[in-house]
Image (cartoon, rainbow, N blue to C red; front, side, top):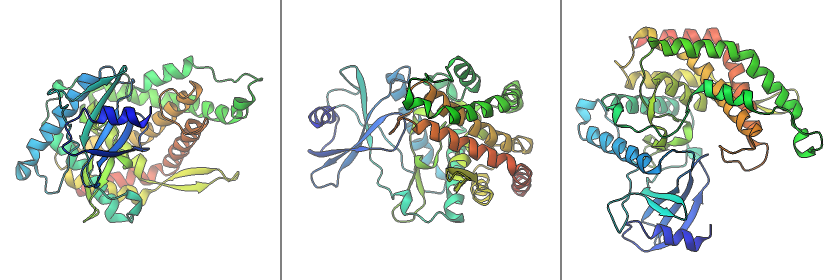
Length: 376
């Protein structure tokens, strides 16, 4: 899409200043996102082309507004909601011509949101205070939404966090490349190793899925994708001021949300004997993140629930590794990629992180046990 078309689309939203420039924002694996700004650069908003992976863009937008409206109301009642921190929301912007928040153009859906001025996380010192605040922000998010009526949400992302579906997908995909397709044949050995990992872990994963769905842990409203890049930070304080990408807000296990946040944050790179980059699980980072989370989410869990967290951390690493592998085998149709083998690399990284979790299993269980008792 050329920039003339982007300007035409952006001008349909109720932006009070004249639009001067539009530039792509490359973070995010699903929607196509752009920064729109006035000539002086002081007025900005976010423009997004919504991905077709969502069932219905209108109800997706309705969900977004329900969530931001509810959180906004709760923030007005800070003391009652036990929230004592600055929190910004990606508020939707209406169209100039109607009260709608969705613009349709050539079969695609577009929306605009308030721009939240923030500090690039790469500029931050990722120390114990940083990760404590990440955990505290997610705990605050869960605490606020604990009062939200989940029945108001319209499901829009089929089979999200549905590992049984990802297994079915895996079983249906061809794991072997055409010997004449030299571009893909080079990856066969790497794929074979990952296939073995999936098969060797499948019984444990499926057993826990069955167990967790028997009512051991209650399902609640969750963010769905609280990875590190979805947290925004204040320029003044370096503290978290927002958790964005609300399209994945849905019904699920809070512990899965927490585990996904830990997966995204508590890792460090290393090299194997072949000098390939792998990911190691960082227990120290996990401690500070979990400490912050439990401080902000007091009262949301029974003690016995929290003890399942290590298993959720293992499970979410397996799930994401499987999803990346499936997408690679399915010609990279789901996640955006910058090069052909990127999803294969992503799968290798996730499974290496899962392996590191397993190697530190007893230490992780002890960490969770100690913090659970501290905040009991």
